Structures are given as C-alpha cells and as structure tokens.
Image 1 (cartoon, one colour):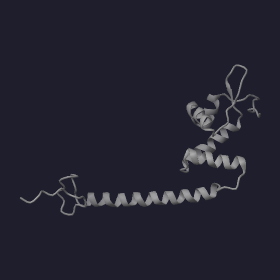
Image 2 (cartoon, helix red, strand yellow; image 1 turned 90 degrees about the horizontal axis):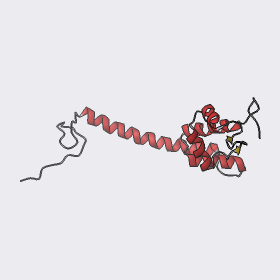
Image 3 (spheres, rainbow, N blue to C red; image 1 turned 180 degrees about the vertical axis):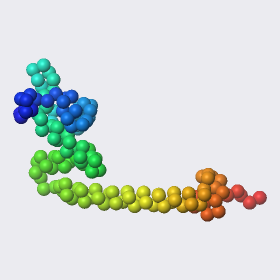
Image 4 (cartoon, rainbow, N blue to C red; image 1 turned 90 degrees about the vertical axis):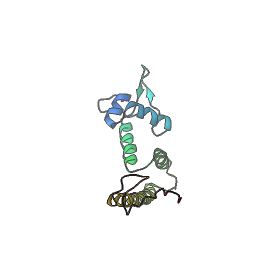
Length: 142
C-alpha cells in the first residue's frame, strides 16, 4: 500500500478531514462498497492509503453533479472492472435529460405560483381574486 508523504497511512479522522466529509460518511461509504475496507494498524486503527482522499473527493463531486450513490457505485465498479457498459459520458447525458425534466416541472410550478400572486389570491379555499387560478369550493345552490 502507498503511504502518505510523511510515510504513514492515514487514520479515519485524517482522511475525513482532508476529503471534507465526516468520519461517519467514510464508514458508510465502506459499508456501501464505494471505498475499500482499510488495513488495520498494529493498534487496530483503520489505516487508509492516501488515494482514499482522492476517491472520496471524486464521489462527492459526482454527487454534486446529481448522481446518486447507487449510480456512483455503478460508475466506480465499471471503471474498476473495465466492462463495456454505459460510462460516465452516457450517464451524464441521461442526467442532463433528468435535470431538464426537473427544470421544466419547476418552471411550470413557478408559472402557476406567479398566476396565484398576480391574481391576488389570499386563500386556498376562499380566494377573493377574480382571476384566481386555484379551484374553488362552490356552495351548492339552495
């Protein structure tokens, strides 16, 4: 295993601090198989190779791009095994389509909210605005 520049493996707290995650995240990623279970020091402490920090920063960057941990795990596994499956580029294109669909949905919600504000709606059930876009309860004719 490779050692840190000072010659030592990294402990959990050091890895977490350098990668900008908390130690619980580190252990969770181990359980999920995103990072390998580390060796143990003679004292029983986890002893991570320094490249664990890089891997964690890659995982966090992928999450910021909108990939779920399951998707990140698949991408990492594909990269590790070199199998001919959809790689990052194909996944990123699919993620762009997902983001575009979410943007379209949010744009429709924004437009509806703008109508509510413009119409002067002040209640979900008894709007007094004449152009209220919300469905109103109507009293049954007597």
